[in-house]
Image 1 (cartoon, one colour):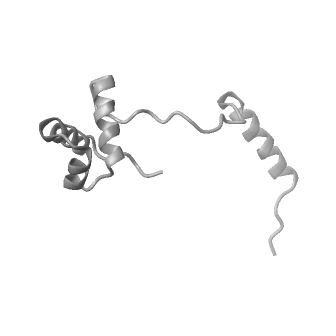
Image 2: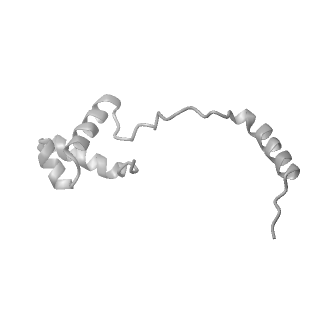
Image 3: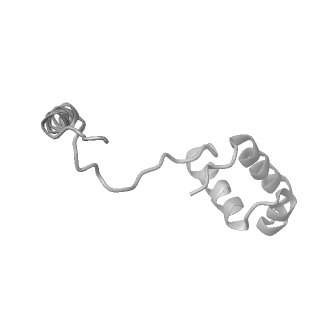
Length: 87
């Protein structure tokens, strides 16, 4: 997924929509998707800002942060137990 567009652009788009109206007209003017204009206007109405929402998704990690050191220790033991043979 691409990075969010700059907040300054989002705010200019929303301000232009407030002044002139028309999602498609503003989208064409700023060369952005009409759905983005609609979403940013809605976002500003809902939270008073056009800042992007934090990413909230994806699978939960299978290895907890508290288990990282245990895993590193196990890997280290296995590496010493079965060293690579080069040559």
